[in-house]
Image (cartoon, rainbow, N blue to C red):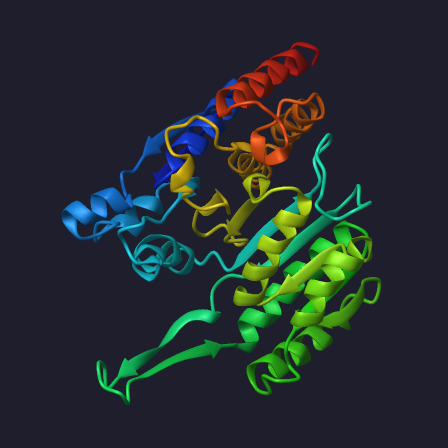
Length: 354
């Protein structure tokens, strides 16, 4: 029997529609006992400017009927970033209980890291995705006066830290049993001390996994100076957000970086997206790097249980990169269509041999 996966497409802004279409073309080229049914939602900043909202009131209810969400980018020069973020992507993450964000990082064949002499990076960054510094707690008072105050409360709960740490330890156990826990508990003496304490308690359940603690500022130095010493990394919402952008740059380009916003319990759909943003300077030129979106599609396939198809797509993406079909941000001359066509061709050749 053929299984149908209902995928909600949120192309969004800037190069989002271009890279998402690239991912859809690659997904559609895969053969197996499954198929995709794509539905696109016009929840963009352009439409926000026209009607005053991103999602309609029943937007989350609509998304709950899908197996997964495939996201392009959000952000527009004429819309303040906090409005676009809190109008679309953060409500989805929170209301669909996507409490962990997974961001793999590798140097693709044929590409170079800006780090001299570094030929291999293989990291998975596990990011807390529901609270921390992005909890949305706080406010402003005395607005417009010299005494104006803005507060931003970082929220840390034992239940959220514990479930995240178990996810991180399970990930590390499945890889090479090395986990680096990132913190800032020397200066943030309440929430981050709780973070450390819960991590240490969970670590006792995983005696085969070696966990070490690293302050976030020192972690930036270690990622640059000793990348091979790292494997699985777990950090707070804010810290992992920043570190994963650094990681993407060290891997060769933010254009290749994927992410998965997961609801591990599978009570709600998970969301898969490149992390590069809307990049309006590239819109309509046909040169946007589609790899971040395509790699995110790999993560989506794997989470849906279609690991064979995910492996085919990942190997095709890696092969094409090694063959030199790369966009300019990776030192190549290919455009978006060149990369997609090459990956689709490689998928066809691989599947014909199976």
